[in-house]
Image (tube, rainbow, N blue to C red; front, side, top):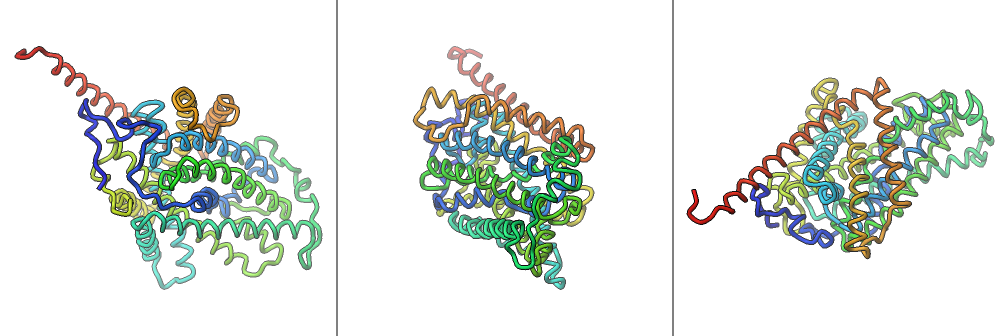
Length: 489
Protein backbone atom coordinates (compact mmCIF):
# COMPACT_ATOMS: atom_id res chain seq x y z
CA UNK A 1 0.00 0.00 0.00
CA UNK A 2 1.23 3.44 -0.91
CA UNK A 3 1.82 5.59 2.15
CA UNK A 4 -0.50 8.54 2.54
CA UNK A 5 0.99 12.00 2.52
CA UNK A 6 0.86 14.10 5.59
CA UNK A 7 -2.34 15.95 6.30
CA UNK A 8 -2.24 19.27 4.42
CA UNK A 9 -4.05 20.90 7.29
CA UNK A 10 -0.97 20.30 9.36
CA UNK A 11 1.28 23.32 8.74
CA UNK A 12 4.35 21.17 9.11
CA UNK A 13 3.20 18.70 6.54
CA UNK A 14 3.99 18.68 2.86
CA UNK A 15 2.18 17.06 -0.02
CA UNK A 16 3.51 14.22 -2.11
CA UNK A 17 4.56 16.57 -4.84
CA UNK A 18 6.23 19.19 -2.70
CA UNK A 19 7.98 16.80 -0.32
CA UNK A 20 10.37 15.56 -2.95
CA UNK A 21 12.34 16.97 -5.82
CA UNK A 22 9.80 18.12 -8.43
CA UNK A 23 12.16 16.91 -11.16
CA UNK A 24 12.39 13.44 -9.62
CA UNK A 25 8.86 12.73 -8.35
CA UNK A 26 8.76 8.94 -8.62
CA UNK A 27 5.25 7.50 -8.77
CA UNK A 28 4.11 4.48 -6.70
CA UNK A 29 2.03 3.24 -9.65
CA UNK A 30 2.94 0.37 -11.96
CA UNK A 31 5.13 0.80 -15.05
CA UNK A 32 3.58 -1.64 -17.49
CA UNK A 33 2.88 0.69 -20.41
CA UNK A 34 5.17 0.35 -23.41
CA UNK A 35 6.03 2.93 -26.03
CA UNK A 36 3.63 1.35 -28.53
CA UNK A 37 0.80 1.69 -26.01
CA UNK A 38 1.47 5.40 -25.50
CA UNK A 39 1.89 6.10 -29.20
CA UNK A 40 -1.39 4.41 -30.09
CA UNK A 41 -3.12 5.99 -27.10
CA UNK A 42 -2.07 9.39 -28.40
CA UNK A 43 -3.33 8.55 -31.88
CA UNK A 44 -6.59 6.93 -30.83
CA UNK A 45 -7.47 9.19 -27.92
CA UNK A 46 -9.15 11.82 -30.08
CA UNK A 47 -10.42 9.65 -32.92
CA UNK A 48 -13.94 9.04 -31.68
CA UNK A 49 -17.60 9.65 -32.28
CA UNK A 50 -16.92 13.40 -32.39
CA UNK A 51 -15.04 12.85 -35.65
CA UNK A 52 -17.07 10.03 -37.18
CA UNK A 53 -20.50 11.53 -36.43
CA UNK A 54 -20.14 15.04 -34.98
CA UNK A 55 -18.11 16.35 -37.93
CA UNK A 56 -21.33 16.51 -39.96
CA UNK A 57 -22.50 19.49 -37.88
CA UNK A 58 -19.27 21.34 -38.69
CA UNK A 59 -19.63 20.70 -42.42
CA UNK A 60 -23.24 21.92 -42.31
CA UNK A 61 -22.18 25.34 -40.94
CA UNK A 62 -18.86 25.83 -42.75
CA UNK A 63 -19.22 23.93 -46.04
CA UNK A 64 -15.88 22.94 -47.61
CA UNK A 65 -14.33 25.60 -45.36
CA UNK A 66 -14.53 22.99 -42.59
CA UNK A 67 -11.06 21.97 -43.75
CA UNK A 68 -9.78 25.37 -42.61
CA UNK A 69 -11.79 25.05 -39.38
CA UNK A 70 -10.07 21.77 -38.59
CA UNK A 71 -6.68 23.26 -39.44
CA UNK A 72 -7.26 26.10 -36.97
CA UNK A 73 -8.70 23.89 -34.20
CA UNK A 74 -6.03 21.25 -34.80
CA UNK A 75 -3.27 23.84 -34.65
CA UNK A 76 -4.55 25.00 -31.25
CA UNK A 77 -4.67 21.41 -30.00
CA UNK A 78 -1.12 20.83 -31.29
CA UNK A 79 0.16 23.87 -29.40
CA UNK A 80 -1.50 22.73 -26.19
CA UNK A 81 -0.06 19.23 -26.57
CA UNK A 82 3.40 20.61 -27.24
CA UNK A 83 3.21 22.69 -24.05
CA UNK A 84 1.91 19.74 -22.09
CA UNK A 85 4.53 17.46 -23.61
CA UNK A 86 7.31 19.85 -22.61
CA UNK A 87 6.18 19.92 -18.97
CA UNK A 88 5.37 16.19 -18.79
CA UNK A 89 8.73 15.17 -20.24
CA UNK A 90 10.55 17.37 -17.71
CA UNK A 91 8.28 16.49 -14.75
CA UNK A 92 6.39 13.23 -15.37
CA UNK A 93 3.44 12.75 -12.99
CA UNK A 94 0.19 10.77 -12.99
CA UNK A 95 -1.66 14.05 -12.39
CA UNK A 96 -0.06 15.63 -15.47
CA UNK A 97 -1.28 19.21 -15.93
CA UNK A 98 -2.89 19.29 -12.47
CA UNK A 99 0.52 18.72 -10.91
CA UNK A 100 2.11 21.24 -13.28
CA UNK A 101 -0.51 23.86 -12.43
CA UNK A 102 0.14 23.36 -8.72
CA UNK A 103 3.88 23.76 -9.17
CA UNK A 104 3.49 26.81 -11.37
CA UNK A 105 0.57 28.68 -9.80
CA UNK A 106 -0.12 27.18 -6.38
CA UNK A 107 -2.34 24.60 -4.73
CA UNK A 108 -5.56 26.31 -5.83
CA UNK A 109 -4.64 25.82 -9.50
CA UNK A 110 -3.74 22.14 -9.13
CA UNK A 111 -6.91 21.50 -7.12
CA UNK A 112 -9.10 23.29 -9.67
CA UNK A 113 -7.54 21.74 -12.78
CA UNK A 114 -7.63 18.24 -11.32
CA UNK A 115 -11.21 18.24 -10.08
CA UNK A 116 -12.58 20.00 -13.18
CA UNK A 117 -10.93 17.47 -15.47
CA UNK A 118 -12.10 14.54 -13.33
CA UNK A 119 -15.67 15.83 -13.44
CA UNK A 120 -15.40 16.28 -17.21
CA UNK A 121 -14.21 12.70 -17.72
CA UNK A 122 -16.82 10.97 -15.54
CA UNK A 123 -19.68 12.92 -17.15
CA UNK A 124 -18.47 12.27 -20.71
CA UNK A 125 -18.00 8.63 -19.71
CA UNK A 126 -21.78 8.40 -19.30
CA UNK A 127 -22.35 9.73 -22.82
CA UNK A 128 -19.96 7.15 -24.25
CA UNK A 129 -21.44 4.23 -22.31
CA UNK A 130 -24.98 5.22 -23.30
CA UNK A 131 -24.04 5.75 -26.95
CA UNK A 132 -22.34 2.34 -27.17
CA UNK A 133 -25.35 0.74 -25.46
CA UNK A 134 -27.74 2.30 -27.99
CA UNK A 135 -25.76 0.79 -30.87
CA UNK A 136 -25.58 -2.63 -29.18
CA UNK A 137 -29.32 -2.49 -28.39
CA UNK A 138 -29.96 -1.95 -32.10
CA UNK A 139 -28.04 -5.15 -32.86
CA UNK A 140 -29.72 -7.13 -30.06
CA UNK A 141 -33.09 -5.50 -29.25
CA UNK A 142 -33.99 -8.27 -26.78
CA UNK A 143 -31.25 -7.04 -24.41
CA UNK A 144 -32.32 -3.82 -22.65
CA UNK A 145 -30.11 -0.78 -23.01
CA UNK A 146 -29.33 -0.59 -19.29
CA UNK A 147 -27.98 -4.17 -19.40
CA UNK A 148 -25.50 -3.22 -22.10
CA UNK A 149 -24.39 -0.20 -20.06
CA UNK A 150 -23.89 -2.42 -17.03
CA UNK A 151 -21.90 -4.95 -19.07
CA UNK A 152 -19.60 -2.29 -20.55
CA UNK A 153 -18.96 -0.65 -17.20
CA UNK A 154 -18.17 -3.98 -15.55
CA UNK A 155 -15.82 -5.08 -18.33
CA UNK A 156 -13.82 -1.88 -18.38
CA UNK A 157 -13.78 -1.58 -14.62
CA UNK A 158 -12.22 -5.04 -14.57
CA UNK A 159 -9.70 -4.01 -17.23
CA UNK A 160 -8.71 -0.95 -15.19
CA UNK A 161 -8.50 -2.89 -11.92
CA UNK A 162 -6.05 -5.32 -13.48
CA UNK A 163 -2.43 -4.47 -14.19
CA UNK A 164 -1.97 -1.32 -16.24
CA UNK A 165 -0.55 -3.33 -19.14
CA UNK A 166 -4.05 -4.77 -19.69
CA UNK A 167 -5.45 -1.26 -20.06
CA UNK A 168 -2.63 -0.55 -22.49
CA UNK A 169 -3.44 -3.63 -24.57
CA UNK A 170 -7.16 -2.79 -24.66
CA UNK A 171 -6.42 0.73 -25.85
CA UNK A 172 -3.74 -0.37 -28.30
CA UNK A 173 -6.09 -2.64 -30.24
CA UNK A 174 -9.07 -0.28 -30.00
CA UNK A 175 -6.95 2.58 -31.30
CA UNK A 176 -5.39 0.38 -33.98
CA UNK A 177 -8.85 -0.45 -35.32
CA UNK A 178 -9.85 3.23 -35.39
CA UNK A 179 -6.61 4.29 -37.05
CA UNK A 180 -6.95 1.45 -39.55
CA UNK A 181 -10.51 2.55 -40.38
CA UNK A 182 -9.36 6.14 -40.99
CA UNK A 183 -6.46 5.03 -43.21
CA UNK A 184 -8.76 2.73 -45.23
CA UNK A 185 -11.29 5.54 -45.58
CA UNK A 186 -8.58 7.91 -46.86
CA UNK A 187 -7.30 5.34 -49.36
CA UNK A 188 -10.80 4.61 -50.69
CA UNK A 189 -11.57 8.32 -50.81
CA UNK A 190 -8.48 9.17 -52.84
CA UNK A 191 -9.19 6.28 -55.24
CA UNK A 192 -12.76 7.52 -55.67
CA UNK A 193 -11.64 11.13 -56.23
CA UNK A 194 -9.17 10.06 -58.92
CA UNK A 195 -11.67 7.66 -60.54
CA UNK A 196 -9.60 4.54 -59.88
CA UNK A 197 -12.41 2.69 -58.13
CA UNK A 198 -14.65 0.49 -60.34
CA UNK A 199 -17.64 2.33 -61.81
CA UNK A 200 -16.40 5.77 -60.70
CA UNK A 201 -15.36 8.87 -62.60
CA UNK A 202 -12.83 11.48 -61.43
CA UNK A 203 -14.65 14.01 -59.25
CA UNK A 204 -12.32 16.95 -59.70
CA UNK A 205 -12.92 20.13 -57.71
CA UNK A 206 -16.62 20.50 -58.51
CA UNK A 207 -17.85 20.18 -54.94
CA UNK A 208 -15.07 22.40 -53.57
CA UNK A 209 -15.74 25.30 -55.92
CA UNK A 210 -19.47 24.81 -56.59
CA UNK A 211 -22.49 24.93 -54.28
CA UNK A 212 -21.62 28.42 -53.08
CA UNK A 213 -17.84 28.10 -53.34
CA UNK A 214 -15.20 26.95 -50.88
CA UNK A 215 -16.49 29.36 -48.21
CA UNK A 216 -20.27 29.41 -48.82
CA UNK A 217 -20.88 31.21 -45.51
CA UNK A 218 -17.69 33.27 -45.63
CA UNK A 219 -15.18 33.39 -42.81
CA UNK A 220 -17.98 33.51 -40.27
CA UNK A 221 -18.82 29.96 -41.34
CA UNK A 222 -15.22 28.90 -40.79
CA UNK A 223 -15.32 30.46 -37.32
CA UNK A 224 -18.57 28.65 -36.52
CA UNK A 225 -16.94 25.47 -37.78
CA UNK A 226 -14.04 25.94 -35.34
CA UNK A 227 -16.53 26.19 -32.50
CA UNK A 228 -18.24 23.00 -33.70
CA UNK A 229 -15.06 20.91 -33.93
CA UNK A 230 -12.51 22.23 -31.41
CA UNK A 231 -13.82 20.07 -28.56
CA UNK A 232 -13.35 16.94 -30.67
CA UNK A 233 -9.61 17.26 -29.96
CA UNK A 234 -10.15 16.66 -26.24
CA UNK A 235 -8.61 13.39 -25.06
CA UNK A 236 -5.03 13.99 -26.14
CA UNK A 237 -4.22 14.91 -22.54
CA UNK A 238 -4.59 11.29 -21.36
CA UNK A 239 -1.34 10.27 -23.03
CA UNK A 240 0.63 12.56 -20.70
CA UNK A 241 -1.19 11.06 -17.70
CA UNK A 242 -0.38 7.54 -18.89
CA UNK A 243 3.29 8.33 -19.52
CA UNK A 244 3.97 8.30 -15.76
CA UNK A 245 3.30 4.53 -15.83
CA UNK A 246 5.84 3.74 -18.54
CA UNK A 247 9.40 2.55 -18.01
CA UNK A 248 10.94 5.82 -19.19
CA UNK A 249 8.29 8.55 -18.72
CA UNK A 250 10.30 11.49 -20.04
CA UNK A 251 11.39 9.81 -23.26
CA UNK A 252 8.04 8.04 -23.74
CA UNK A 253 5.88 11.14 -23.49
CA UNK A 254 8.18 13.11 -25.78
CA UNK A 255 7.96 10.42 -28.47
CA UNK A 256 4.21 9.96 -28.08
CA UNK A 257 3.47 13.69 -28.35
CA UNK A 258 5.73 14.13 -31.38
CA UNK A 259 4.16 11.24 -33.27
CA UNK A 260 0.57 11.94 -32.29
CA UNK A 261 -0.03 15.60 -33.06
CA UNK A 262 1.02 15.55 -36.72
CA UNK A 263 -0.74 12.31 -37.55
CA UNK A 264 -3.97 13.31 -35.83
CA UNK A 265 -4.04 16.59 -37.73
CA UNK A 266 -3.43 14.64 -40.94
CA UNK A 267 -6.26 12.20 -40.18
CA UNK A 268 -8.75 14.93 -39.30
CA UNK A 269 -7.93 17.36 -42.09
CA UNK A 270 -7.42 14.58 -44.63
CA UNK A 271 -10.79 13.04 -43.81
CA UNK A 272 -12.60 16.34 -44.14
CA UNK A 273 -10.88 17.10 -47.45
CA UNK A 274 -11.95 13.72 -48.86
CA UNK A 275 -15.55 14.18 -47.65
CA UNK A 276 -16.13 17.68 -49.04
CA UNK A 277 -14.39 16.76 -52.31
CA UNK A 278 -16.52 13.68 -52.93
CA UNK A 279 -19.91 15.00 -51.79
CA UNK A 280 -21.70 18.36 -51.94
CA UNK A 281 -21.61 19.94 -48.50
CA UNK A 282 -25.33 20.70 -48.78
CA UNK A 283 -26.01 16.96 -48.52
CA UNK A 284 -24.62 16.86 -44.96
CA UNK A 285 -27.02 16.73 -42.04
CA UNK A 286 -26.08 17.18 -38.37
CA UNK A 287 -26.31 13.90 -36.48
CA UNK A 288 -25.69 11.80 -39.60
CA UNK A 289 -22.18 10.50 -40.20
CA UNK A 290 -20.56 12.05 -43.29
CA UNK A 291 -18.36 8.95 -43.43
CA UNK A 292 -21.42 6.78 -44.00
CA UNK A 293 -22.60 9.18 -46.71
CA UNK A 294 -19.24 8.92 -48.51
CA UNK A 295 -19.05 5.12 -48.26
CA UNK A 296 -22.61 4.84 -49.54
CA UNK A 297 -21.80 7.24 -52.35
CA UNK A 298 -18.84 5.23 -53.62
CA UNK A 299 -20.78 1.96 -53.44
CA UNK A 300 -19.35 0.26 -50.36
CA UNK A 301 -21.96 -2.33 -49.29
CA UNK A 302 -23.37 -2.12 -45.74
CA UNK A 303 -21.56 1.19 -45.18
CA UNK A 304 -23.89 2.14 -42.34
CA UNK A 305 -23.25 -1.06 -40.40
CA UNK A 306 -19.51 -0.82 -40.98
CA UNK A 307 -19.45 2.69 -39.56
CA UNK A 308 -21.68 1.61 -36.68
CA UNK A 309 -19.03 -0.94 -35.72
CA UNK A 310 -16.26 1.68 -35.95
CA UNK A 311 -18.24 4.19 -33.85
CA UNK A 312 -19.06 1.44 -31.35
CA UNK A 313 -15.37 0.63 -30.93
CA UNK A 314 -14.52 4.33 -30.74
CA UNK A 315 -17.03 4.86 -27.91
CA UNK A 316 -15.75 1.88 -25.92
CA UNK A 317 -12.17 3.02 -26.45
CA UNK A 318 -13.01 6.49 -25.15
CA UNK A 319 -14.87 4.97 -22.17
CA UNK A 320 -11.82 2.89 -21.29
CA UNK A 321 -9.42 5.82 -21.64
CA UNK A 322 -11.62 8.20 -19.66
CA UNK A 323 -12.01 5.73 -16.81
CA UNK A 324 -8.25 5.33 -16.72
CA UNK A 325 -7.58 9.08 -16.89
CA UNK A 326 -10.15 9.94 -14.21
CA UNK A 327 -8.81 7.33 -11.78
CA UNK A 328 -5.22 8.56 -12.17
CA UNK A 329 -6.28 12.18 -11.80
CA UNK A 330 -8.17 11.60 -8.55
CA UNK A 331 -5.27 9.45 -7.29
CA UNK A 332 -2.87 12.30 -7.98
CA UNK A 333 -5.19 14.69 -6.13
CA UNK A 334 -5.19 12.32 -3.14
CA UNK A 335 -1.39 12.16 -3.29
CA UNK A 336 -1.27 15.90 -2.81
CA UNK A 337 -3.85 15.91 -0.03
CA UNK A 338 -6.58 17.38 -2.28
CA UNK A 339 -8.82 14.29 -2.32
CA UNK A 340 -9.63 11.67 0.36
CA UNK A 341 -6.49 9.86 1.42
CA UNK A 342 -8.35 6.54 1.35
CA UNK A 343 -7.96 6.67 -2.45
CA UNK A 344 -4.20 6.25 -2.13
CA UNK A 345 -4.25 2.50 -1.66
CA UNK A 346 -2.29 0.84 -4.47
CA UNK A 347 -2.61 -2.86 -5.29
CA UNK A 348 0.52 -5.03 -5.57
CA UNK A 349 0.49 -4.58 -9.35
CA UNK A 350 0.66 -0.79 -8.96
CA UNK A 351 -3.04 -0.11 -9.71
CA UNK A 352 -4.90 2.51 -7.60
CA UNK A 353 -8.00 0.34 -7.23
CA UNK A 354 -9.91 2.60 -4.87
CA UNK A 355 -9.39 5.52 -7.23
CA UNK A 356 -10.69 3.37 -10.11
CA UNK A 357 -13.76 2.33 -8.10
CA UNK A 358 -14.46 5.92 -7.00
CA UNK A 359 -14.36 7.11 -10.60
CA UNK A 360 -16.49 4.29 -11.95
CA UNK A 361 -19.01 4.78 -9.11
CA UNK A 362 -19.60 8.38 -10.15
CA UNK A 363 -19.61 7.20 -13.75
CA UNK A 364 -22.46 4.80 -12.90
CA UNK A 365 -24.37 7.68 -11.30
CA UNK A 366 -23.87 9.76 -14.45
CA UNK A 367 -25.09 6.89 -16.63
CA UNK A 368 -28.23 6.47 -14.52
CA UNK A 369 -28.93 10.19 -14.78
CA UNK A 370 -28.41 10.02 -18.54
CA UNK A 371 -30.80 7.08 -18.89
CA UNK A 372 -33.45 8.54 -16.57
CA UNK A 373 -33.26 12.30 -17.19
CA UNK A 374 -31.31 12.88 -20.45
CA UNK A 375 -33.04 16.20 -21.16
CA UNK A 376 -32.99 17.69 -17.66
CA UNK A 377 -30.60 16.68 -14.87
CA UNK A 378 -27.97 15.10 -17.10
CA UNK A 379 -28.24 17.88 -19.67
CA UNK A 380 -27.30 20.38 -16.97
CA UNK A 381 -24.30 18.24 -16.00
CA UNK A 382 -23.25 17.94 -19.63
CA UNK A 383 -23.53 21.71 -20.10
CA UNK A 384 -21.51 22.20 -16.92
CA UNK A 385 -18.53 20.45 -18.53
CA UNK A 386 -19.10 21.76 -22.08
CA UNK A 387 -16.35 24.39 -21.95
CA UNK A 388 -14.22 22.90 -19.17
CA UNK A 389 -11.69 21.60 -21.69
CA UNK A 390 -10.80 25.16 -22.77
CA UNK A 391 -10.45 26.23 -19.12
CA UNK A 392 -8.04 23.32 -18.59
CA UNK A 393 -6.11 24.20 -21.76
CA UNK A 394 -5.77 27.78 -20.53
CA UNK A 395 -4.31 26.56 -17.23
CA UNK A 396 -1.87 24.36 -19.17
CA UNK A 397 -0.68 27.38 -21.19
CA UNK A 398 -0.25 29.64 -18.15
CA UNK A 399 1.56 26.86 -16.27
CA UNK A 400 3.95 26.33 -19.19
CA UNK A 401 4.79 30.03 -19.29
CA UNK A 402 5.92 29.90 -15.66
CA UNK A 403 7.45 26.43 -15.49
CA UNK A 404 9.60 26.90 -18.59
CA UNK A 405 11.60 29.58 -16.78
CA UNK A 406 11.93 27.36 -13.70
CA UNK A 407 13.12 24.37 -15.72
CA UNK A 408 15.62 26.45 -17.69
CA UNK A 409 17.03 27.81 -14.45
CA UNK A 410 17.15 24.63 -12.36
CA UNK A 411 17.27 21.64 -14.75
CA UNK A 412 17.73 22.68 -18.38
CA UNK A 413 18.78 19.13 -19.31
CA UNK A 414 15.16 18.09 -18.67
CA UNK A 415 13.93 20.05 -21.68
CA UNK A 416 14.00 17.10 -24.06
CA UNK A 417 10.86 18.43 -25.76
CA UNK A 418 10.54 22.19 -26.20
CA UNK A 419 7.57 24.38 -26.99
CA UNK A 420 7.92 26.02 -30.39
CA UNK A 421 8.74 29.76 -30.47
CA UNK A 422 8.40 30.14 -26.69
CA UNK A 423 6.78 32.28 -25.35
CA UNK A 424 5.07 33.78 -28.42
CA UNK A 425 3.13 30.71 -29.53
CA UNK A 426 2.01 30.07 -25.96
CA UNK A 427 0.57 33.59 -25.82
CA UNK A 428 -0.98 33.07 -29.27
CA UNK A 429 -2.70 29.92 -27.97
CA UNK A 430 -4.07 31.84 -24.99
CA UNK A 431 -5.46 34.51 -27.32
CA UNK A 432 -7.07 31.77 -29.44
CA UNK A 433 -8.70 30.27 -26.34
CA UNK A 434 -10.06 33.68 -25.37
CA UNK A 435 -11.47 33.94 -28.89
CA UNK A 436 -13.21 30.55 -28.47
CA UNK A 437 -14.80 31.81 -25.24
CA UNK A 438 -15.97 34.97 -27.04
CA UNK A 439 -17.43 32.87 -29.88
CA UNK A 440 -19.29 30.65 -27.43
CA UNK A 441 -20.69 33.71 -25.67
CA UNK A 442 -21.99 35.13 -28.96
CA UNK A 443 -23.43 31.81 -30.18
CA UNK A 444 -26.94 31.08 -28.95
CA UNK A 445 -26.49 27.30 -28.92
CA UNK A 446 -23.05 27.32 -27.25
CA UNK A 447 -23.77 30.11 -24.73
CA UNK A 448 -25.57 27.85 -22.20
CA UNK A 449 -22.55 25.51 -22.15
CA UNK A 450 -20.17 28.39 -21.50
CA UNK A 451 -22.33 29.86 -18.74
CA UNK A 452 -22.89 26.53 -16.99
CA UNK A 453 -19.21 25.59 -17.35
CA UNK A 454 -18.18 29.00 -16.03
CA UNK A 455 -20.46 28.44 -13.05
CA UNK A 456 -18.95 25.01 -12.37
CA UNK A 457 -15.44 26.44 -12.69
CA UNK A 458 -16.27 29.34 -10.39
CA UNK A 459 -17.63 26.90 -7.80
CA UNK A 460 -14.47 24.79 -7.89
CA UNK A 461 -12.31 27.93 -7.66
CA UNK A 462 -14.37 29.10 -4.67
CA UNK A 463 -13.87 25.77 -2.90
CA UNK A 464 -10.14 25.92 -3.68
CA UNK A 465 -9.94 29.49 -2.34
CA UNK A 466 -11.82 28.70 0.88
CA UNK A 467 -9.69 25.61 1.38
CA UNK A 468 -6.48 27.59 0.89
CA UNK A 469 -7.69 30.30 3.28
CA UNK A 470 -8.51 27.76 5.99
CA UNK A 471 -5.16 26.01 5.61
CA UNK A 472 -3.31 29.31 5.91
CA UNK A 473 -5.30 30.30 8.99
CA UNK A 474 -4.45 27.00 10.67
CA UNK A 475 -0.81 27.36 9.68
CA UNK A 476 -0.66 30.92 11.04
CA UNK A 477 -2.32 29.82 14.28
CA UNK A 478 0.12 26.94 14.69
CA UNK A 479 3.07 29.22 13.95
CA UNK A 480 1.80 31.68 16.56
CA UNK A 481 1.55 28.96 19.19
CA UNK A 482 5.03 27.74 18.37
CA UNK A 483 6.51 31.25 18.75
CA UNK A 484 5.31 31.75 22.35
CA UNK A 485 7.91 31.62 25.12
CA UNK A 486 7.84 28.60 27.43
CA UNK A 487 5.12 28.88 30.06
CA UNK A 488 3.28 31.70 28.29
CA UNK A 489 -0.52 31.42 28.24
